[in-house]
Length: 304
Ligand SMILES: [Zn+2]
Image (tube, rainbow, N blue to C red):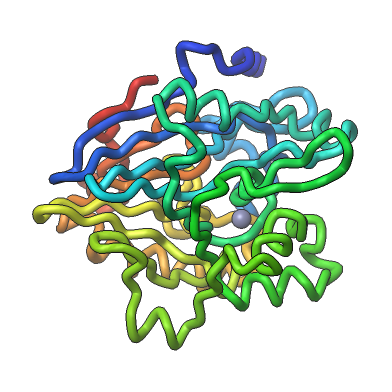
């Protein structure tokens, strides 16, 4: 008997975590929960193993979160990731059961869209950059954060434009093309990141390829404290084992190596890990258990 999935996100659950990192304030907001196929989320791992960590519904879907992180540095307000957005058609909404809550979540956290100075997308899959822009009833699309400079990786845009058979459904160009055309989005390159990974003081990006070739983690550092938004390299606390990688990953072998590389710093340096799709553990610290396997303990600031 599979546990029924929880009901839709309640108003009291719109702010998922709030904590201080050195001089920075971190707030984890959410675009609400959604559902993806459990098999696709765990690749070659048998269902008998993964369903202990992530119960599936009768359509084999598991519940996931859509966590965005607001960083207030004192001089600027940064938004990492913009959730799934409001551009799915009725059929896709039924499949994913998504909630379109990011605007309400930001409001609940006391963050106005006008005050966002910088938006960073770890990659451009539709569930990571959905609220970059807002779709209106007349079909027009406008920037959700009118005063923000947006940052994404150039190769991600080019890959999306190829509309390959393998992953064309993951790329919705209204999430980024209008921002590129208007000059509001800055496109990063590997060379540019190598030379200068910093987006604003204390916030930088680093490539962790595997899920996509140019997946970027976002580092947040203040007064010796370090948080990292690791995005789809480790989507939830159920994906900590290096070999538990998603079927969505374009290069699963690379994902395994990159996870190990991530742990080499994140564990000894006790980073606060910000998890993109874990609805119930948005922040975690990772440790090794007695068998040498990575395990998560809830990070500070979780409100759910
Ligand atoms: Zn993705």
